[in-house]
Structures are given as C-alpha cells and as structure tokens.
Image: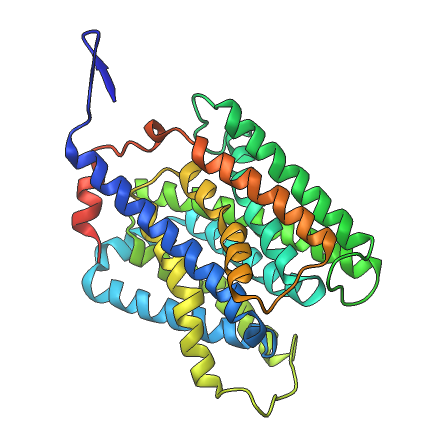
Length: 336
C-alpha cells in the first residue's frame, strides 16, 4: 500500500508479479535444499565432497560463463572489471562451501544445516548494523522474538554438540567445536554472498553471469583439495556411478543455488535471508513424513526452538520492504 494525498492506494499490478516470482524462486531453493538434506544426504556423505563440488560447481562455472560470453559479452566484461565485488563474492562462496562440507564430516548434519540456515538472516542483520547493507526501517516484535529464538536454538545445538549429546560427532570435543564454528562461518558467509549479489545486480549484472563467475575460486580450491586427497573416501561397491552422482548434484545442489540467484533482482536481501531460514523446518517436516531418521533428544529440542523462531521471523518480515522498484520489470525481461 502507498499513502498519497492522505489516502491509501494499492501499488500497480506490475509490483506484485516480480515479488511473487522472487518468493517462488526462494521457496524452490529452500525446498530443493531440504529434499537434498533428507533424501540424498547419506549419498553425498559417501563420496569425496571436494570431488563432487569441483565437478558440480566447475560445470556451473563453465556453462554459465560460456553462455554469458555468447549472449551477454558486454555484461560479462563489466562483471570481470568489477573486482571490488567479484573477488569478495568468490571468497565468500569458497568459504561457504569449504566450511559446510568440512562441518558435515565432523558433527551431525542436521545440526550443521540448522546452524548454517539460522546464521543467514543473523549475518544479514549484522551486515546492516555494520553499515555494509541497507538496514530495515522497522522491525516487528514478532521478528525480534523470532531472531531471538533462532539465536537460542543455535546456542542450544552448539551446547548439545559440545557436551556429546547429539547424534554424531567424529572425534572429541575439539572436533565438535570445529564443526560448530565451521557451520557458523558457512552461514554467515552465505549472508554476505546474498548481499554482494544484490550490489552486483544494482550494477547491471544478471543472474547467469553472477552464477557462473561466483564459483571460480571454489572450483580451483576443490580441484587442489581433490588432487591432494582431502576428504577422499574408499569406493562403496553398491553406490551408483560417479557421473550419475554429479548429475544429481547439479539438480539438488547447483539448481537451488541458481534459483536463489534468480530471486536477487526481485526480492530484498532480508526476505531472501528470512526464507532461507525455513530450510530446517522443511527438513524436520520431511523427516517426520519419511520416518526413517530419528533425532537425539537434545537435537530435537534445538530444532523445535529453531523452527518456532524461523516461522516467526519469516511471517513478520514486512512486505513493503520487498516492493520492487522500476528495475524489476527490466530484470524480468532480462532473465535468461
């Protein structure tokens, strides 16, 4: 709604369509991530994560950059010249995935995913307080309570992990602490990836160019890690062929990230971060339906607190913060 001459007026219809499409992309990202965590998590834990990452993100880099060179060469040149965003974006993406893949080898994957998801909106809030991102003009009491519950849940899950009451810790107390810290860093870095993507979009760089160029550093690091045997695992006889695993990885790892990138021109960074926090709630519901996986009592308590906080935070984000400006129509026309 807009106030004009003392009267409230609806925004023109063109404003609602980009917002709805952006939210659809966000929920597609969250849903695919949750599906991957519930139904395919064990598959990816049985293979070399850096090898899978090198292929999945390497193909994404080559494919999107190649398409950009053919159909958007001017935009690609502009992006390559923008080192003030390109370099920190690549550093944050590499930090996100290196920390995440290492964390799931050390502590319970459900805890890693929950801490990671919760740190995305908290990281966006921190960036706003530091002046690195636009701050919200107002926050509802429900949103403040929701973020408070997310913080409590992260602390509770960290305590459960460090005290040895979670479902899985590989090693002793030091490995548990390392897993928690890696999860926190991974989620915080993701928040800055979203904010940097928004800044890049404001300079006219579209989703395809951004998605390709953001994986340059991580692909290089993953290739080096694979060649040195980091996270190498023995072959599992009953496991499917590696090319099939890469194909699945493109569908449940690369595709959801691309959907989030498509949401950047259409939805505010705060809304994207809030919707991302819903991931563990969807995982929790999917696992209840699936019925194959149980939680340690401490982990379950942390997840329940987290889900309550995430739902409050998402529902209370003010829709007027997401009202797209005139560039939304251009962004829709420019999508590939």
